[in-house]
Image (tube, rainbow, N blue to C red):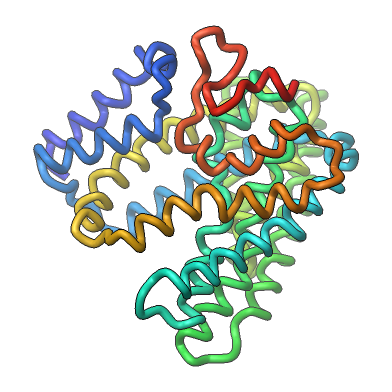
Length: 358
């Protein structure tokens, strides 16, 4: 990476902190802004000379921190109260979305066999916790809905992983792989639960004894999130699931100062995610600008709208949620692309007001 490109990137991150609240009133979130800046960076200075492996590693670390910090805010008593809704979304809505995406990809995208179409449908079905943080962390969104979207976005990747692996194996004419992915999922849950509970109890005990220096507690939790991920990989488990489950366990046993400690993780994740989206814009747009046909564009639109909204609406029938709430949950994939507070800070500018679902 050239010195000029590095100067542009670091200046953009600093300037964003100065005008973020003002820019968000214009319905522009950090991912949108930094994607655009990345594309502009490529157009003016060329793509940053960074290896794909480094970008992949940075993206994974960012997602680990986002998953951990989001999960730590979920209280178990509320989780148990809404378990039926999570079951509807993850046990019924997610499979329906995968199947709908699979069949549409097979019918719409030319030259794709069933296995590759399944890979497309499964890979695009889960929502993304990193993109959805603007919704999940906003007090303008009712707490119940934030919990629902938080839990779904944290666990859906791990649930879909066996299907993705099966599709890859099928496309490569192999018949094994899905069983191993399921074991990875269960291993990630076990590692996250065990390490998260132990770490939370140790931090709570150390804080009550007065052993913890407040200026290092935040970085310690930051390291814990990465430790969960790495330990899961060492155990041949799913590191992202371990980060989410570990954050959930940690947040419920770490004591009164957990929010202050996790806040450091959240802020670090937000900072690094800005860099990730900028690099994504600088490297991806040049690749896809000449490769998008009408079929792919139509599939992308349907994947972000009908392929999720219709299954969500079906599985939430009888859930006693209002029509506006069901629409918002189904719209989540688009809200994570353009989720911003309105000028009043009381609702979001979507096709409807969130005041309808409070």
